[in-house]
Length: 113
Image 1 (cartoon, rainbow, N blue to C red):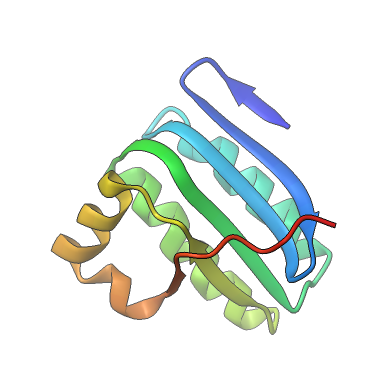
Image 2 (image 1 turned 60 degrees about the vertical axis):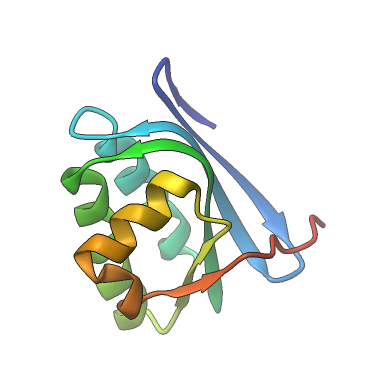
């Protein structure tokens, strides 16, 4: 688990591949934590990688930038990147920026192994 007082990323395996469960504020200060967790997860070359945004309270443009770069990196690695259970804050940002159109978004969390 990567932990900052304002933001955490917990990584676990599910039946549908690894899940990065994010909680707190994803902003300029905390975005590098998610970027590092994503880089590590993508190095394993999973078929699908889920980013659970259910407990994200705020996402800045820096957080969105990490998600967009992860989308490009995952595509290059042959990995499907899914945004799972986006919070109201995450959904709002994806809608107003149009970024939601480039992600697969699902309301269901995969079952834990």
